[in-house]
Image 1 (spheres, rainbow, N blue to C red):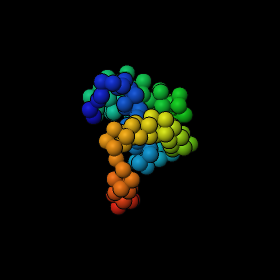
Image 2 (image 1 turned 180 degrees about the horizontal axis):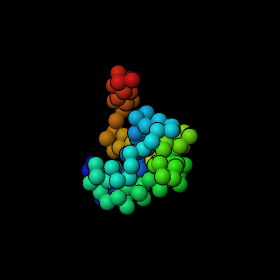
Image 3 (image 1 turned 90 degrees about the horizontal axis):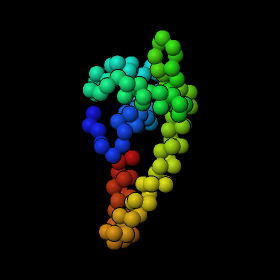
Image 4 (image 1 turned 60 degrees about the vertical axis):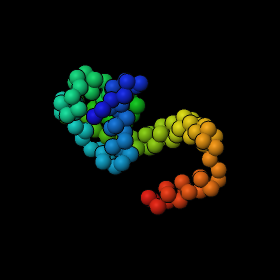
Length: 121
């Protein structure tokens, strides 16, 4: 896993795990790979992974079953979708609109983009 310097590593790990839930690679009730295993896999300190897992637990996305491990919590998918939707509308759409204005894209350009997106659905 490659990390960006603009965001904390534990947040990037948490984001990656959330994307796995969104992609349905992890489902409600699934046991999450252990802190130690993930730390070894992505070559980071175990404390960094633990911080990501604790963050996700505080957000209601993971639950910790003492002595057993971390699991995807009930309602995790809905929590993530809500957060991602807010991020999309509050950050990504304004950035996209700015880029459209800067590039002076017209409705035909945007229509072509929409058609391309529909091909991949």
